[in-house]
Picture 1 (tube, one colour):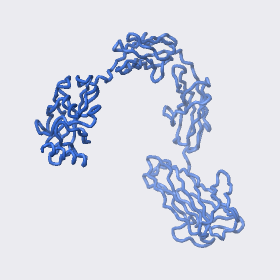
Picture 2: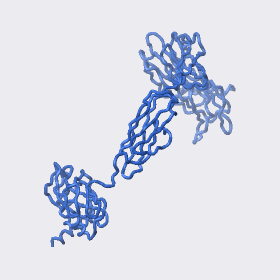
Picture 3: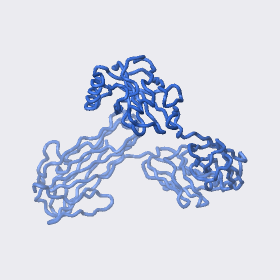
Picture 4: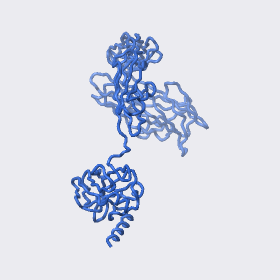
Length: 524
């Protein structure tokens, strides 16, 4: 009757994928609970007639109160065998505990109607909730049968480590072209395999066979510089892993570096108004010397280094502050062992203050009969694409971006400033026009000095394709002066770059032609 009750519990467990509650001798699958730690097996060796003891590496989960253990392995043991019946003996949730097998390995094989073969036999101790029979975690260990009757706790097929050391002769420094001998010593000395000597990530020669634990390579191919040399051993011995030596640093001296000369041309030079673009052109001899030019203003770097191409490098700037500047070009070779660095004579440039003023831009667009096309303007005017008819056929629309503006405030007192724009009516020069109020914009601050606090102006929507001569609705269009950007008092000194995207809405009654307006920008 007791066996019947246990078998019934096993059927319920299989149906619910819960833990196993069966007597010794029943074949079961191990539950899929999470691993809590490992099992150690005592003694470390034994026979099939022994019933060893296992010890957990920690206590069971707090929501468990009993445990059991299952062994799985090759052949008939693949179904799993409950080697420790459910019990609370020595059970602990706070510390590791020990548990002894209820049966020997031979008894387990007999119950399973199988035989023991060489291989790995895994032991899983499951912490159980005795009321629900569910597993609350598990500990895992293994034994390894090396024959049908003998087992051990160490894996006989596990790979063993090797070690590799490297000797470099001479230890350096050496000169480029000198013969350097690299000798690798591999342990165990009986190990077979090959050694690949390496310079950083690059191979030095081919693989060298290990003989008596030694492999060596002589090379004269090391170039000038510091080399990180290693020996990488690849094992061909069963059960022995490969290994890599520690890196050995070797300094190789090269021939004397080739002298270079650097010259500098500044255009424009002499006296230059602030914000005017200045181009610095450096030339390096010999022209094949690889490296970069660092342009310098009185010892302070101007921008990032520029790569030398065909003996030349250029740098353009419009951000030199008002005052006297001493410009030069410094050549930094890629390989200082091959080429020496050099610096040009200095060139004096005086930057005069920016005087400010009012600027204007022309904005044009072409309205054509039939298909609309983009008109072509010069490089200075802003040319908008030909207006396109909206989907409801109520108006013609186009958009673009004005030319960027630079605002520089160097006035004493840090008074702050305001930049505003106003556009004239668009005219085709033949008594036809587009109302200026039909042009709107979205101001943008591209960048500004760290000392500034620049506020971007409000977006101004265009009027809805009103006719020429009609007054603009309040707040719409650029027929009236609108703020592009501003800086408050105490926050205006410095340089800011401004821009705006513009949009135009023209009536469908607009006569075909090229229409041009003037956008006047004023800084106050």
